[in-house]
Image (tube, rainbow, N blue to C red; front, top):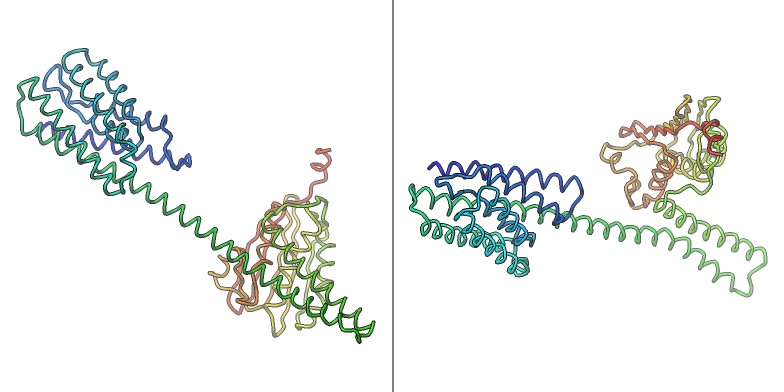
Length: 421
């Protein structure tokens, strides 16, 4: 069984080449292998086959070159090109009787696989594997009959077993690997498509819900203003409420736009301490209503670069969420730490806290820890703004122990700012 052993070793090397080809294609993000790249891989396989060929007769080379030609012809559609490459490579080993037999057989085989290429891809995955194996067995039989007619062979059982079993086994294994990879690609595309559709549905439901509420209220007050007996004072009061509701709807749209396109409208120096104090003053009435005390411990220095309005929007959302997490009261401590390279802002509360699973999902599209009461737009906006301002977010929390948000931003550098101009 010397030839069979030789063929098994050859087959193992071909599968190794295929494995590395698929890994490299995956690294280069090829969903389908380019024909030039595939041809190069097949040529490497052919060279391996010729270098490791078994030579019982000076004019004969027993090897597994049928495998790369079958795979390239049926799966890639480059059968004639590969057959020509195989003929050229065989020519380097002598232009003898074996070369002529080889040329005729492989040109015919290459053309046959190319001719059936379009029909081959109309078959199901399992049928493609069976078709590849049957084609290989037929060609192996033709090769064996040609060998029987050309020379008197020894070890006939070894030759017949090696040519009938190993090429068919090799083609079957490689075809199965290719089909497995293709199936995984299809599944991955379907999952991505499903997730996109789900995100669109969630987005539509969330925005529709958030906008419908203020619009419904505004429409109700518009109808009330149509009453002829309404007093001017009441009319102005209703107009004020309509304006507030429309502004609420506008904020929802602005939040979505900030998430979908996290760009900064106006870049400027933001003094962190000054702006945080402004935000705290805005939220103090809300904090007092919820019996929440806001404490601060700010570094004297510290500026970052970004959009002042979006900075306000980001920390208004975070601190407001902290207040809402303490329905029975509590306190929030806001720290800032300054270094020459980074500024850190910590927002620590004594609220209900979050589980590790909730922390992992924080900032995901339309995920909210408030359940049906929230849409998740606020935290999506926070993550988008911080990313746009080249910052990072770290969240630490325990159930009923509170939550700490740690924001880190690059320090504003006056010298680098001046160099730009």
